[in-house]
Image (cartoon, rainbow, N blue to C red; front, side, top):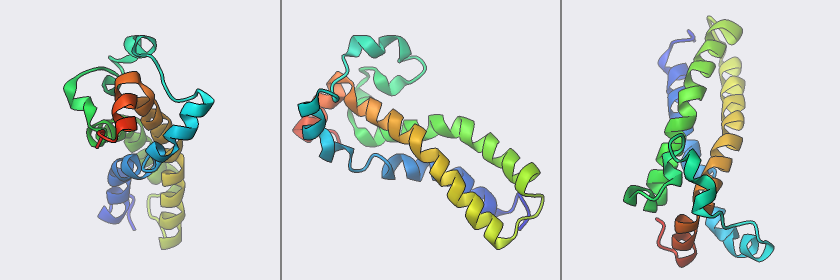
Length: 140
């Protein structure tokens, strides 16, 4: 495959969005235990200065829904992930990729996306207004 073939570009472009839904999928299931340990709730005042960089930490009515918050997490991670992955595919793995190179490169890319997406999604869940909605089961 060429480094700019649809089979290479498609997973690079789609993975941040799929990962932003799949990585934090079971996070609300751990809320009771996280609350018991004191790890769950983050006051809104602690994240106010980061709300410009990460808007989903704010109180805008759109961020009440976890799907919209996770879409924004995927979009923000993709701003850094897309150029990095494309440059890596072109200059390190490419200009032509074998099937196994594409498979292993794709798996590595998805694995590297998981930590920032999971941490940002958990932070968006832990901010006080979102946390209360998640506990009540209204966040979806």
